[in-house]
Image 1: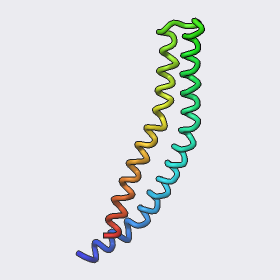
Image 2 (image 1 turned 90 degrees about the vertical axis):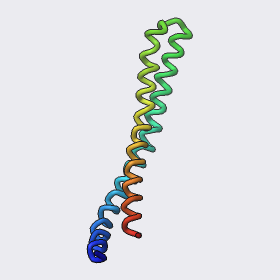
Image 3 (image 1 turned 180 degrees about the vertical axis):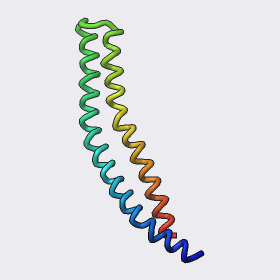
Image 4 (image 1 turned 120 degrees about the horizontal axis):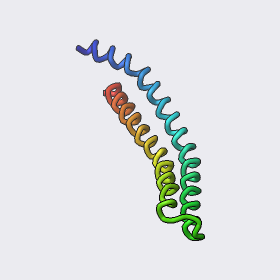
Length: 99
């Protein structure tokens, strides 16, 4: 039984390294994209509010850019959730290896 557990740990170690690299890449991509997407969402929201203030559009027309801003804002949040799942997988592999 100890031999099987040792073989499992040896096989799980490269997988943990690959998952760690994937986690780093996801973290980098989410960090960079969140800056871009948050600026874009802020721009959409600013356009919607200013078009209402200056009377260019009605409430229903201004709701479209607000909805688009919300969707654009949520893209990095979904990426953070995926990154959290990858972290849980890596932590599980690490706990198995070091147990």
